[in-house]
Length: 373
Ligand code: HEM
Image (cartoon, rainbow, N blue to C red; front, side):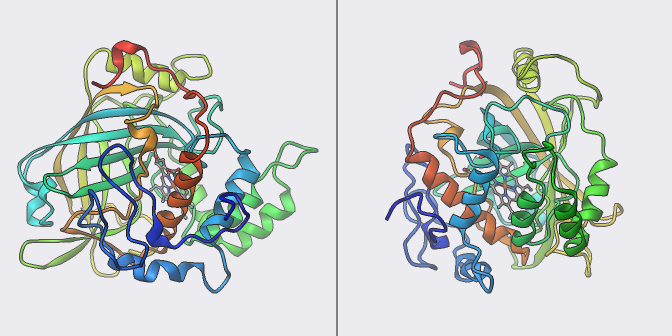
Protein backbone atom coordinates (compact mmCIF):
# COMPACT_ATOMS: atom_id res chain seq x y z
CA UNK A 1 0.00 0.00 0.00
CA UNK A 2 1.25 3.49 -0.77
CA UNK A 3 2.39 4.81 2.55
CA UNK A 4 0.98 8.23 1.77
CA UNK A 5 -2.38 7.16 0.51
CA UNK A 6 -4.91 9.49 2.09
CA UNK A 7 -6.74 8.23 5.14
CA UNK A 8 -4.67 5.06 5.39
CA UNK A 9 -5.84 3.33 8.53
CA UNK A 10 -3.22 1.95 10.89
CA UNK A 11 -4.06 -0.46 13.66
CA UNK A 12 -3.16 1.26 16.91
CA UNK A 13 -1.20 -1.80 17.86
CA UNK A 14 1.02 -1.24 14.86
CA UNK A 15 2.77 1.62 16.62
CA UNK A 16 6.26 1.96 15.26
CA UNK A 17 9.14 2.18 17.64
CA UNK A 18 12.71 3.15 18.18
CA UNK A 19 15.19 1.61 15.83
CA UNK A 20 18.72 1.37 17.09
CA UNK A 21 17.71 0.67 20.68
CA UNK A 22 16.74 -2.93 20.25
CA UNK A 23 13.07 -2.04 20.10
CA UNK A 24 10.76 -3.23 17.43
CA UNK A 25 7.16 -2.71 16.41
CA UNK A 26 4.44 -3.77 18.70
CA UNK A 27 2.65 -6.99 17.88
CA UNK A 28 0.31 -6.68 14.95
CA UNK A 29 -2.63 -7.91 16.97
CA UNK A 30 -4.19 -5.59 19.51
CA UNK A 31 -3.49 -6.94 22.94
CA UNK A 32 -0.31 -8.77 22.01
CA UNK A 33 2.48 -7.67 24.32
CA UNK A 34 5.22 -5.50 22.92
CA UNK A 35 8.23 -7.26 21.54
CA UNK A 36 11.81 -6.10 21.82
CA UNK A 37 12.45 -3.55 24.50
CA UNK A 38 9.04 -2.84 25.95
CA UNK A 39 7.48 -5.60 27.94
CA UNK A 40 5.20 -3.47 30.04
CA UNK A 41 3.37 -1.32 27.54
CA UNK A 42 -0.17 -1.06 28.73
CA UNK A 43 -1.48 -3.26 25.98
CA UNK A 44 -4.96 -3.23 27.48
CA UNK A 45 -5.27 0.27 26.11
CA UNK A 46 -4.90 -0.88 22.55
CA UNK A 47 -7.98 -3.02 22.75
CA UNK A 48 -10.13 0.08 23.07
CA UNK A 49 -7.81 2.39 21.18
CA UNK A 50 -9.45 1.25 17.95
CA UNK A 51 -12.72 2.69 19.17
CA UNK A 52 -11.72 6.31 18.74
CA UNK A 53 -11.89 5.98 14.96
CA UNK A 54 -15.60 5.40 15.14
CA UNK A 55 -18.31 6.53 14.66
CA UNK A 56 -16.96 9.36 12.49
CA UNK A 57 -14.21 7.39 10.73
CA UNK A 58 -11.39 9.71 11.78
CA UNK A 59 -8.25 7.64 11.30
CA UNK A 60 -4.60 8.28 12.11
CA UNK A 61 -3.93 8.58 8.38
CA UNK A 62 -6.63 11.23 7.94
CA UNK A 63 -5.26 13.06 10.96
CA UNK A 64 -1.70 13.11 9.66
CA UNK A 65 -2.96 14.15 6.20
CA UNK A 66 -4.46 17.24 7.88
CA UNK A 67 -1.13 18.13 9.54
CA UNK A 68 0.48 17.89 6.09
CA UNK A 69 -2.29 19.98 4.51
CA UNK A 70 -1.93 22.76 7.09
CA UNK A 71 1.87 22.80 7.55
CA UNK A 72 3.14 21.23 4.31
CA UNK A 73 5.10 18.01 4.09
CA UNK A 74 8.67 18.29 5.37
CA UNK A 75 10.64 15.17 4.55
CA UNK A 76 11.81 13.25 7.60
CA UNK A 77 10.31 15.63 10.17
CA UNK A 78 7.60 15.07 12.76
CA UNK A 79 4.18 16.18 11.50
CA UNK A 80 3.73 18.15 14.72
CA UNK A 81 6.46 19.55 16.98
CA UNK A 82 8.70 19.40 13.91
CA UNK A 83 11.32 21.84 15.17
CA UNK A 84 13.40 20.45 17.99
CA UNK A 85 16.66 19.48 19.62
CA UNK A 86 17.58 16.14 21.12
CA UNK A 87 18.78 16.11 24.73
CA UNK A 88 19.95 13.75 27.42
CA UNK A 89 20.03 13.68 31.19
CA UNK A 90 19.07 11.87 34.36
CA UNK A 91 16.02 11.63 36.59
CA UNK A 92 16.90 11.30 40.27
CA UNK A 93 14.01 9.93 42.31
CA UNK A 94 13.71 10.88 45.99
CA UNK A 95 11.57 7.81 46.73
CA UNK A 96 8.39 9.77 47.59
CA UNK A 97 6.54 8.55 44.49
CA UNK A 98 6.85 4.92 45.61
CA UNK A 99 3.94 5.44 48.02
CA UNK A 100 1.70 6.11 45.00
CA UNK A 101 3.18 3.92 42.26
CA UNK A 102 5.09 0.67 42.09
CA UNK A 103 6.96 1.92 39.00
CA UNK A 104 10.69 1.32 39.52
CA UNK A 105 11.43 4.87 38.34
CA UNK A 106 10.03 6.11 41.68
CA UNK A 107 12.32 4.04 43.88
CA UNK A 108 15.20 6.07 45.31
CA UNK A 109 17.87 6.18 42.62
CA UNK A 110 18.58 7.53 39.18
CA UNK A 111 17.33 6.73 35.67
CA UNK A 112 18.93 7.82 32.37
CA UNK A 113 16.65 9.89 30.16
CA UNK A 114 16.57 10.62 26.42
CA UNK A 115 14.73 13.90 25.83
CA UNK A 116 13.62 16.29 23.11
CA UNK A 117 12.81 19.99 23.29
CA UNK A 118 10.41 21.18 20.60
CA UNK A 119 8.04 23.84 19.36
CA UNK A 120 4.53 22.88 18.32
CA UNK A 121 3.52 23.03 14.68
CA UNK A 122 4.64 21.10 11.65
CA UNK A 123 7.13 23.60 10.19
CA UNK A 124 10.69 22.66 11.11
CA UNK A 125 12.19 25.99 9.96
CA UNK A 126 9.59 28.25 11.66
CA UNK A 127 10.98 31.22 13.58
CA UNK A 128 10.92 30.80 17.37
CA UNK A 129 8.25 32.79 19.20
CA UNK A 130 7.52 32.96 22.92
CA UNK A 131 3.84 32.30 22.26
CA UNK A 132 4.39 29.04 20.38
CA UNK A 133 3.65 26.03 22.58
CA UNK A 134 6.91 24.46 23.82
CA UNK A 135 7.34 20.74 24.28
CA UNK A 136 9.59 18.53 26.37
CA UNK A 137 9.40 14.81 25.67
CA UNK A 138 11.10 12.23 27.90
CA UNK A 139 12.00 8.58 27.56
CA UNK A 140 13.04 7.02 30.88
CA UNK A 141 15.29 4.00 30.37
CA UNK A 142 14.21 1.86 33.32
CA UNK A 143 15.96 -1.25 34.53
CA UNK A 144 15.05 -4.42 32.72
CA UNK A 145 12.88 -4.09 29.66
CA UNK A 146 10.58 -1.28 30.75
CA UNK A 147 10.29 2.31 29.52
CA UNK A 148 8.24 5.35 30.40
CA UNK A 149 7.61 7.86 27.64
CA UNK A 150 5.86 11.17 28.16
CA UNK A 151 5.49 14.28 25.99
CA UNK A 152 4.66 17.44 27.92
CA UNK A 153 3.94 21.08 27.05
CA UNK A 154 4.37 24.48 28.71
CA UNK A 155 0.67 25.47 28.68
CA UNK A 156 -1.51 24.83 31.78
CA UNK A 157 -4.41 23.07 29.99
CA UNK A 158 -4.79 21.43 26.58
CA UNK A 159 -6.98 23.16 24.00
CA UNK A 160 -8.99 20.09 23.03
CA UNK A 161 -11.03 17.59 25.02
CA UNK A 162 -11.52 15.07 22.22
CA UNK A 163 -9.42 14.07 19.17
CA UNK A 164 -12.03 15.39 16.74
CA UNK A 165 -11.73 18.81 18.39
CA UNK A 166 -7.99 18.93 17.64
CA UNK A 167 -8.66 17.87 14.05
CA UNK A 168 -11.41 20.44 13.54
CA UNK A 169 -9.28 23.14 15.20
CA UNK A 170 -6.48 22.59 12.68
CA UNK A 171 -8.95 23.22 9.87
CA UNK A 172 -10.73 26.12 11.58
CA UNK A 173 -7.48 28.00 12.30
CA UNK A 174 -5.82 27.38 8.93
CA UNK A 175 -4.91 30.77 7.41
CA UNK A 176 -6.89 31.84 4.34
CA UNK A 177 -4.67 32.78 1.36
CA UNK A 178 -6.30 36.21 0.85
CA UNK A 179 -5.86 37.47 4.41
CA UNK A 180 -3.20 35.24 5.98
CA UNK A 181 -5.65 34.79 8.88
CA UNK A 182 -8.24 32.15 9.77
CA UNK A 183 -11.69 32.56 8.25
CA UNK A 184 -13.66 34.32 11.06
CA UNK A 185 -16.93 32.53 10.24
CA UNK A 186 -15.25 29.10 10.30
CA UNK A 187 -13.52 29.93 13.56
CA UNK A 188 -16.73 31.14 15.19
CA UNK A 189 -18.58 27.98 14.12
CA UNK A 190 -15.75 25.86 15.51
CA UNK A 191 -15.75 27.64 18.88
CA UNK A 192 -19.53 27.34 19.14
CA UNK A 193 -19.19 23.59 18.65
CA UNK A 194 -16.30 23.24 21.13
CA UNK A 195 -16.96 25.64 24.05
CA UNK A 196 -14.32 23.80 26.12
CA UNK A 197 -11.69 24.99 23.61
CA UNK A 198 -12.78 28.61 23.94
CA UNK A 199 -12.53 28.31 27.75
CA UNK A 200 -9.11 26.65 27.51
CA UNK A 201 -7.84 29.32 25.09
CA UNK A 202 -8.78 31.97 27.65
CA UNK A 203 -6.81 30.14 30.38
CA UNK A 204 -3.78 29.84 28.10
CA UNK A 205 -4.04 33.52 27.09
CA UNK A 206 -3.83 34.51 30.80
CA UNK A 207 -0.57 32.54 31.26
CA UNK A 208 2.60 34.42 30.33
CA UNK A 209 5.20 32.10 28.85
CA UNK A 210 8.74 32.35 30.23
CA UNK A 211 11.53 33.58 27.97
CA UNK A 212 13.24 30.22 27.49
CA UNK A 213 13.07 26.45 27.55
CA UNK A 214 15.19 26.11 30.69
CA UNK A 215 12.83 28.19 32.83
CA UNK A 216 9.58 26.74 31.41
CA UNK A 217 7.30 24.47 33.33
CA UNK A 218 6.18 21.41 31.37
CA UNK A 219 2.84 19.73 32.04
CA UNK A 220 1.68 16.22 31.15
CA UNK A 221 -1.96 17.48 31.06
CA UNK A 222 -3.54 14.07 30.38
CA UNK A 223 -4.55 12.16 33.51
CA UNK A 224 -2.99 8.76 34.25
CA UNK A 225 -3.42 6.24 37.05
CA UNK A 226 -0.72 5.24 39.51
CA UNK A 227 -0.97 1.80 41.14
CA UNK A 228 1.01 1.13 44.32
CA UNK A 229 2.60 -2.13 45.46
CA UNK A 230 -0.62 -3.13 47.28
CA UNK A 231 -2.74 -2.57 44.15
CA UNK A 232 -4.36 0.72 45.22
CA UNK A 233 -4.97 3.07 42.29
CA UNK A 234 -4.82 6.89 42.26
CA UNK A 235 -5.64 9.25 39.35
CA UNK A 236 -2.74 11.69 38.79
CA UNK A 237 -1.24 14.29 36.49
CA UNK A 238 2.44 15.26 36.43
CA UNK A 239 4.44 18.42 35.82
CA UNK A 240 8.05 19.55 35.70
CA UNK A 241 8.78 22.81 37.52
CA UNK A 242 12.00 24.57 36.52
CA UNK A 243 14.72 25.50 39.01
CA UNK A 244 15.79 28.38 36.75
CA UNK A 245 13.81 31.47 37.80
CA UNK A 246 10.92 32.74 35.71
CA UNK A 247 11.59 35.67 33.41
CA UNK A 248 9.34 37.04 30.69
CA UNK A 249 10.19 38.80 27.45
CA UNK A 250 12.44 37.94 24.56
CA UNK A 251 16.09 37.82 25.53
CA UNK A 252 17.63 37.32 22.14
CA UNK A 253 16.98 37.82 18.47
CA UNK A 254 17.27 35.42 15.58
CA UNK A 255 15.20 32.65 14.08
CA UNK A 256 16.28 30.08 16.65
CA UNK A 257 16.58 32.33 19.70
CA UNK A 258 14.85 29.92 22.10
CA UNK A 259 16.99 26.96 21.04
CA UNK A 260 20.18 29.08 20.92
CA UNK A 261 19.50 30.23 24.49
CA UNK A 262 19.00 26.63 25.61
CA UNK A 263 22.33 25.58 24.06
CA UNK A 264 24.04 28.54 25.73
CA UNK A 265 22.33 27.78 29.07
CA UNK A 266 23.50 24.15 29.06
CA UNK A 267 27.09 25.23 28.35
CA UNK A 268 27.03 26.58 31.93
CA UNK A 269 25.79 23.37 33.56
CA UNK A 270 22.70 21.16 33.73
CA UNK A 271 19.20 22.63 33.78
CA UNK A 272 16.92 21.06 36.40
CA UNK A 273 13.21 20.56 36.92
CA UNK A 274 11.40 19.19 40.00
CA UNK A 275 8.87 16.55 39.04
CA UNK A 276 5.58 17.08 40.86
CA UNK A 277 2.68 14.62 40.83
CA UNK A 278 -0.79 16.06 41.47
CA UNK A 279 -3.26 13.67 43.09
CA UNK A 280 -6.93 13.90 42.02
CA UNK A 281 -9.88 13.98 44.39
CA UNK A 282 -13.07 12.07 43.57
CA UNK A 283 -14.96 14.01 40.92
CA UNK A 284 -11.89 15.63 39.34
CA UNK A 285 -12.10 15.07 35.57
CA UNK A 286 -9.68 12.45 34.24
CA UNK A 287 -11.15 12.50 30.74
CA UNK A 288 -10.84 16.21 29.97
CA UNK A 289 -7.37 17.75 29.51
CA UNK A 290 -8.92 21.19 28.94
CA UNK A 291 -9.84 21.40 32.65
CA UNK A 292 -7.26 22.01 35.38
CA UNK A 293 -7.79 20.35 38.74
CA UNK A 294 -8.35 22.68 41.72
CA UNK A 295 -5.15 24.34 42.91
CA UNK A 296 -5.39 22.88 46.43
CA UNK A 297 -4.90 19.27 45.31
CA UNK A 298 -2.15 17.29 47.05
CA UNK A 299 1.17 17.54 45.25
CA UNK A 300 4.01 15.09 45.76
CA UNK A 301 7.50 16.02 44.65
CA UNK A 302 8.96 12.77 43.37
CA UNK A 303 12.40 13.75 42.10
CA UNK A 304 14.52 15.98 39.88
CA UNK A 305 15.17 15.87 36.15
CA UNK A 306 18.62 17.15 35.09
CA UNK A 307 19.24 17.84 31.42
CA UNK A 308 22.99 17.94 30.80
CA UNK A 309 23.39 18.05 27.03
CA UNK A 310 21.62 18.85 23.79
CA UNK A 311 22.41 17.53 20.35
CA UNK A 312 21.42 18.20 16.77
CA UNK A 313 18.76 15.70 15.78
CA UNK A 314 20.45 12.65 14.29
CA UNK A 315 20.15 8.88 14.11
CA UNK A 316 20.44 7.24 17.54
CA UNK A 317 19.14 10.22 19.48
CA UNK A 318 15.61 11.50 20.10
CA UNK A 319 15.09 12.14 16.39
CA UNK A 320 14.03 8.56 15.84
CA UNK A 321 12.02 8.07 19.02
CA UNK A 322 8.24 8.00 19.00
CA UNK A 323 7.33 9.65 22.33
CA UNK A 324 4.07 7.74 22.48
CA UNK A 325 2.50 8.66 25.85
CA UNK A 326 0.91 5.22 26.21
CA UNK A 327 4.29 3.50 26.63
CA UNK A 328 4.15 3.04 30.39
CA UNK A 329 5.90 0.88 32.98
CA UNK A 330 4.17 -1.33 35.54
CA UNK A 331 2.70 1.01 38.16
CA UNK A 332 1.48 3.67 35.67
CA UNK A 333 -1.65 3.09 33.60
CA UNK A 334 -3.84 5.02 31.19
CA UNK A 335 -6.88 6.95 32.36
CA UNK A 336 -10.14 7.29 30.45
CA UNK A 337 -8.81 10.43 28.68
CA UNK A 338 -9.84 9.98 25.02
CA UNK A 339 -6.79 11.91 23.76
CA UNK A 340 -4.38 9.17 24.82
CA UNK A 341 -5.43 6.46 22.39
CA UNK A 342 -5.58 9.01 19.57
CA UNK A 343 -2.12 10.31 20.41
CA UNK A 344 -0.74 6.80 20.31
CA UNK A 345 -2.03 6.00 16.86
CA UNK A 346 -1.43 9.44 15.29
CA UNK A 347 2.17 9.59 16.62
CA UNK A 348 2.72 6.09 15.21
CA UNK A 349 1.46 7.18 11.80
CA UNK A 350 3.61 10.34 11.84
CA UNK A 351 6.60 8.25 12.93
CA UNK A 352 5.98 5.68 10.23
CA UNK A 353 5.88 8.32 7.49
CA UNK A 354 8.86 10.37 8.67
CA UNK A 355 11.19 7.43 9.26
CA UNK A 356 10.55 6.11 5.74
CA UNK A 357 11.40 9.45 4.11
CA UNK A 358 14.84 10.87 3.34
CA UNK A 359 15.92 13.01 6.31
CA UNK A 360 16.56 16.65 5.59
CA UNK A 361 19.13 18.28 7.90
CA UNK A 362 17.96 19.13 11.37
CA UNK A 363 16.37 22.54 11.73
CA UNK A 364 18.46 23.40 14.78
CA UNK A 365 22.22 22.86 14.98
CA UNK A 366 23.85 22.30 18.35
CA UNK A 367 27.62 22.90 18.43
CA UNK A 368 29.69 19.74 18.58
CA UNK A 369 30.83 20.55 22.12
CA UNK A 370 27.27 20.16 23.39
CA UNK A 371 26.45 16.91 21.68
CA UNK A 372 25.31 14.19 24.03
CA UNK A 373 27.91 11.46 24.43
C1 HEM B 1 -5.40 14.27 19.85
C2 HEM B 1 -4.43 14.96 20.41
C3 HEM B 1 -3.04 15.06 19.82
C4 HEM B 1 -2.58 14.82 18.56
C5 HEM B 1 -3.37 14.33 17.35
C6 HEM B 1 -1.15 15.08 18.55
C7 HEM B 1 -0.32 14.92 17.44
C8 HEM B 1 1.06 14.91 17.48
C9 HEM B 1 1.94 14.42 16.45
C10 HEM B 1 1.50 13.91 15.08
C11 HEM B 1 3.21 14.53 16.89
C12 HEM B 1 4.50 14.08 16.18
C13 HEM B 1 4.79 12.63 16.57
C14 HEM B 1 6.04 12.04 15.95
O1 HEM B 1 6.22 12.11 14.71
O2 HEM B 1 6.86 11.45 16.70
C15 HEM B 1 3.14 15.11 18.21
C16 HEM B 1 4.22 15.42 18.98
C17 HEM B 1 4.13 15.98 20.24
N1 HEM B 1 3.00 16.21 20.97
FE1 HEM B 1 1.13 15.82 20.40
N2 HEM B 1 -0.78 15.50 19.79
C18 HEM B 1 -1.91 15.50 20.60
C19 HEM B 1 -1.96 15.84 21.94
C20 HEM B 1 -0.90 16.25 22.69
C21 HEM B 1 -0.95 16.60 24.08
C22 HEM B 1 -2.20 16.52 24.98
C23 HEM B 1 0.31 16.98 24.44
C24 HEM B 1 0.85 17.44 25.77
C25 HEM B 1 0.34 17.13 26.91
C26 HEM B 1 1.16 16.85 23.26
C27 HEM B 1 2.52 17.11 23.20
C28 HEM B 1 3.35 16.76 22.17
C29 HEM B 1 4.80 16.93 22.20
C30 HEM B 1 5.63 17.52 23.33
C31 HEM B 1 5.28 16.42 21.00
C32 HEM B 1 6.73 16.33 20.56
C33 HEM B 1 7.26 14.98 20.99
C34 HEM B 1 8.63 14.76 20.42
O3 HEM B 1 9.55 15.56 20.72
O4 HEM B 1 8.79 13.76 19.69
N3 HEM B 1 0.40 16.41 22.23
N4 HEM B 1 1.83 15.33 18.55
